[in-house]
Amino acid sequence: QQLIAMLGTGDTEIDLVGNPPVAVMMVGLQGSGKTTTTAKLGLWLKKRRKRKVLMASLDVRRPAAQRQLAVLGEQAAIDTLVQNLYEALKMPRPEAGYVTIQWAKGSPLMIPLPASNS
Image 1 (tube, rainbow, N blue to C red):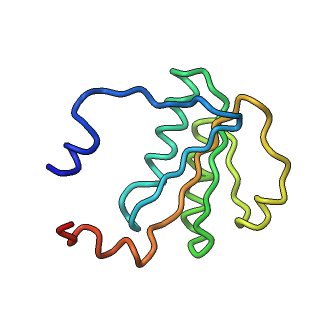
Image 2: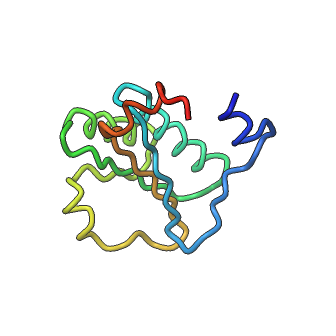
Image 3: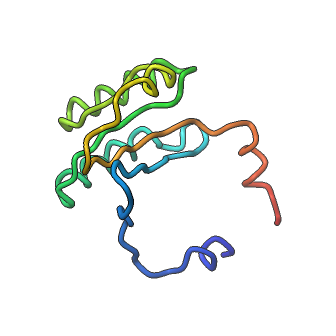
């Protein structure tokens, strides 16, 4: 209920205003659906919002997760970075108009959050 009160109950459009490339960060616990949601969001942005999308995995400890994102990117015809974070940072910035969707698995600090009463 606190989360609903904080976020609100009405529909809200995704705010993509900002200096391109606009970054969207997907964060959550392992197994919470970040990879699938990232691909679905990328496809939605591509088809409905007519935006160029670049997906990047920041989970350097799980190569299989990076490969899963690459496969989903291929299926949706969305550019995907599968290098490690340090190699991705060396790459030239995407051209103007891109929306980059990056995801990382949750850290151990996120584990107590669901049990927190505050």
